[in-house]
Length: 326
Length: 294
Image (tube, rainbow over all chains, first blue to last red; front, side, top):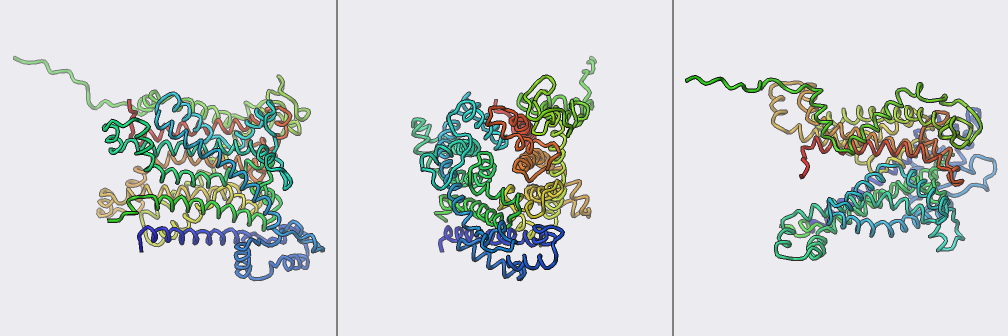
């Protein structure tokens, strides 16, 4: 077998194993709850009979291993079980399925992430390239200080500053991003612009710095010096000689930062009251609706692991030293 | 012909420690000086909060949601507590909790990491795999999950974040100490018959201290931001404890009325982490042996 395929398959297997282990951790966190979940929900005064009925209704009286595999296979088919929000009562008709709650919100979060990526990736690459070319200029210094500041400050600070100036002082954008299923596409875009701008500021900083670093590392290598000594122009050196070799690190940088987006989205959605999956997770944590929290955590973790896996694989596939083994 | 003995400078006279520190500080770039001044100011506020703050931490001093005045510089919050006093007390609570968390995570991660790298063997393999898995979930998501399960309390927050953060410390401590542990002087110490504590404390720790100290600064900034984010989301530090993250969350509706009050605690968080990053940047530059290209 070709060594590249073998390495890629190894990485895929490792990623799947990690995902499995993560799902075990997420599932078992419910089991570790002291006193069981029923008592936490029903309170101290619950009689043993109510607790047993509650557990039976939610299926919590069966062995954990059985429930884990049911949950896992269900999750693979998009069924995350029932929410605890309507459970525990005597009526069973107000039980809501987790997948029904998550579905539309997943779309919203995906929408926001895509919008951010469309703005952020070209911007970061252009800025990274420019700061690498004109390094140590005033432009580079300003970009450097600005990005260090946006990396270091909390997301909600950036978000509220943007909201304060662009939505409240100068009414250019909507201050809150409340959307629902009937919101038209363009209104959805305009309402999601401020959260997307916040996320853009945060990940552009990371992406730009990493792009800059990888281009600078490339530009100091001997074959670039050779190209310069041959008398090629600056743009030829960068576009024809440096960039083809820079794609691998840049692709890794993009995937890595989209993975970072997964975390940033939680806080930003809460700030702008954007009905995405991050806000849902925070709400479910607040009300201790564990099936919803577990489903959200699993989706977040799976996305994160997947994007990191893609970054790994892109790095392997585009490495010429692995493609042409001796 | 006799020549006068040349009066050479005494070789043995050295700079004292304080002179060395002063020399290093004088050469610091303006960003690092700015960072250190800011950090010193925060530490001062945290240490003397009782004397600086004009009002008490949970003292209700007037009407709710007042704008800034000479009595209340930053106005009052949703139940009429003085915002300035709460920002000052917040320095003590937020920074204290973050410091404690990072300290615990270094105790767990550092000790396990160095021990794993010195002994190798099955413990090293198991711990490394566990750390790989734990690191594949974003800290914020994991912490939200675990806090939902364990319930919101400060001790749960500290413990959960310390364990999650210890994975990062473990990886760094293990990798740096592994590169030291294979060197000849450690081998020599082993052959000399030194016991494990000597090898760790006299041979390895002094050599991995600079990256670990820098990591302490970075981890502090990261943990501090995570705690603020969790408090902002309402699952971190709980009221009535004054804390910057939850203060932003409590007053966030004011911003839609055009009042910048929620920006004050948020700016306090941002300023500290920016300052911390500047100082760590400079420290890394100093200790990594890189010189300015001038």
